[in-house]
Each structure stands twice: as C-alpha cells, then as structure tokens.
Image 1 (cartoon, rainbow, N blue to C red):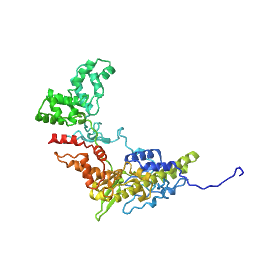
Image 2 (cartoon, rainbow, N blue to C red; image 1 turned 30 degrees about the vertical axis):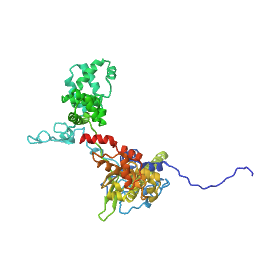
Image 3 (cartoon, helix red, strand yellow; image 1 turned 60 degrees about the horizontal axis):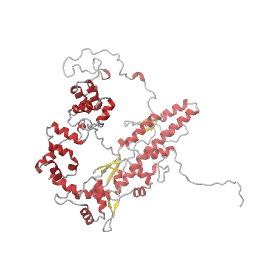
Image 4 (cartoon, one colour; image 1 turned 45 degrees about the horizontal axis):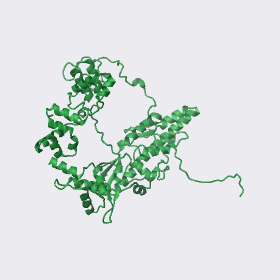
Length: 525
C-alpha cells in the first residue's frame, strides 16, 4: 500500500455550541428573579432592546423589515430539541393555552429622543407665582404640597416624611447614651453594639474586644453587665443559657433551682425530666411550672426589632380545575419579561452609519436582540410543555392528595414530550407551580419508587413519607410507634420498606425517635 497525500470528502454531523445556543440553554434553568435580572442587564447593554409595556396595543415594525445581515425575528424561532440543537418553536402546540407574549419584535412609533425641556427638575425652582392665600384652617393648614412634592415653604411633603420601624441597634443605641455616663464606657458599649447579631447575641468574647480597644477586661465586663440590663431582656447574651437567665432575672425568677435547670438545658432538650428533677431537687409539679416558664421565654429577643419579611414564592405556572373536568395549565404572565427589538431605531441608525466597525456592532446587537426574544419565547413554551405533562402524569395527586402521588422520573417526562432529560432537568430547576393544594417546586413531583409487597404498582417515596407522618401524628400517648412497628403497619398496606429506610425518612422530616416522643408526650400530658 503506497503512502501518499490525498484529499477526501467526508460528511458528518456535529453539535456546535454557539454563544447564542449556550444563552438559550442557560435561560432554561434561571428562576424568574434571575431571569428578570438577566433581561435588565441586556436592556442596559443592547440599545436595540426595549421593554414592552403592558398597555402597548399598537402594531410595531418587525425586525425582518430592517436591512442588515442579522437573523429576522419573525422567522422560525429557534429553540432546543431533545439533542440540544436549535429547533422550531412552531412544533410546540398546547391546546387551550395562550402562548406568552414577547415573541414579536417591534420598533418604535414615537420620537426617538425625549424633549428634555419639558422634563421637570425637582431641584429647580419653577417659574410660577405662589398661591394667593395659604390655608388658614382645617387639616390641610400648613401642609399644602407644592410642586415636586414639596410644601409651601420649600420643605418636603408629608408623604416623604413617613415614619419607619427602628432597628435593634438603633433601639439599643438610644439606651446606651442614657445608661453610661463615662465617655470611655460609651466607646466600649458602642463597639459591643456592633458585635451583636440579628438575634441580639454578642458574637465576640470579652478578651477579643478588650484587645481591640486597648482597655482592660474588667472595664469591658463592667460595660457588658450594664448592657445586659437593656430592653429587650436577654440581649448581649453570649449563649442560650445566659439569654434565658437574663430574662428570668428580669422577672425575678432566677432562683438556684432555675439556675440549675438553665445549666442543664441539654437534658430538657432530651425530655429527660426525671434526671432534671433529681438535679434540681424539685417534685413533678415544680418541674412542670419551671418548664412552662422556660417555654414562655424568647430565645432570640433581638428578632423583635430586626427581622426579614419572608418573601412569598412567585409561581411560574398556575394549575386550575376546569368546570367540565380536567386541569388547565397556564403560565404566570407576571414572571415573563416582555422585550422587543426596536427595528425602526435600528434602521435609522444604520442609514447614518458608515464605519465598518459600527455596522458590525449594530449587526451583533440586532442578532443578539432577536435571539434573546426567541429564547425567552422558547423558554416559556418549554416550561408550559413540561408542566402540562407533569400535571397529566400526576393527575391523581391533584384530585386526591399527596397519598396518591406516583413515582416519576425525568426520563418519563422527557420521552413523553420528546425532549432530552437534561432539558427537563433545567426546566424544573427553581420553578414553582401553584395548584389548588398549594405551591410546589416542579422537582417535588419527581420521587423515587418503593416496591409493593403484593407485586402491584410501586409507591412514591413522598407518599410513603406522608403516610409515616400520619401514623406518628395519630399515635396515642401510651402506645408510641417504634420504627419496627411502622414497618409492620406499612407492610400491611402493601409497602415493601426496610426499617433503616423508615428511620431515614423519619429523621429527614425532623421527627424524633420513639423514646424522645414518649417523653415529650408524657411531659405535655
């Protein structure tokens, strides 16, 4: 065989991960908050993108009407197929569901620039005469709001001076200036005030504070003793026991028996009441009263002032029951960013652009804008498609509850909607569904399977956990169910499960062992 150079023609298929395709894949796994932040960055970076207002009802120019080498927006909207390649959005059809807005590319019908002479400057004095007579009586006397939200004397109006809740450190700082007279002690106290967490605990020890301020530990201890009398009771404590002791001292209930109970809180956590009675030298009645007093205390007193309001989860999908049966799945339009391509602005700028670099920049901008609009539209359609299939697979859950949740995995959904498992995994990440039974993450519906003892259909792991919780909630005080007993009860209902699996599920749900539950039930009885 002779060795010589030669030319060969071969045909092959390869997947090229272009930046646009990587962006489309990235958008799938973003939550609604992350998606909003991403779109805001694109709006600031790309001059051809504009936000679509909800009140826009006039037709806008399409991007394909503009000259240039970029892709058009009303062509085939590229998405992500099961193999990760770009595909046609038109192939996704969901009956009864209105596709999300944002797929059209628009121009601008109004003027391109703002008439800045008509914009009011709040810092300037308007050229207008003052009112003839100020109000002399009534609720509005002296509070007449002038131009720009200011009152008649040039100050801010009432709506700009509303009160707010003070923070924990502001509340303690007000007491610090009254309780300490020595300026050096105030400096130490002000530094210790910055060393507390949101719960009111002192997170640094006395030696560290004294070394940082260059003073003796005796002074720091004296200042700390004064700070521990501040309101709310329990602040500036260094651990839970000291926090509870400070509150009991404020109520004049810190006797030797209570102090012994504070020193042995671990026994109270284990509900070992007999051991506490022996250590504290009290009877059943006194111990019950002492425990009730401990329960009435606040382990985190600082949260009375500083707390974060829990932000409600904003669902991406709504599931509602149809009057004639079945379920209606629709996207939450409030979480879908609406962006359009300003094709008219692109055309006008392109007419006056002569430089090759500038034209290349405009081409990149219009291509990126068109692709972003397509990617957002395809993301919405994919979420809707996956959610619809999840509802179809878990129809018994929506109709009857968590005990009828079926085992489900990503492959089942991917095969049903002809997508890749990785695409379904990205879609279900950080997405939530609002149902008549509550708000659930999409990944909640994917659970492992537990085999049946009779060889029937497998049981969902989440349904088994729910069954375990129900059995424990209904157990009587005199017959607390052990893990072995739970296994017997589950086997009787057709669930083939091992004892170690029951213990794992119980611990994952934060349920104590049978010994601890028995002690707790006797204590509360």
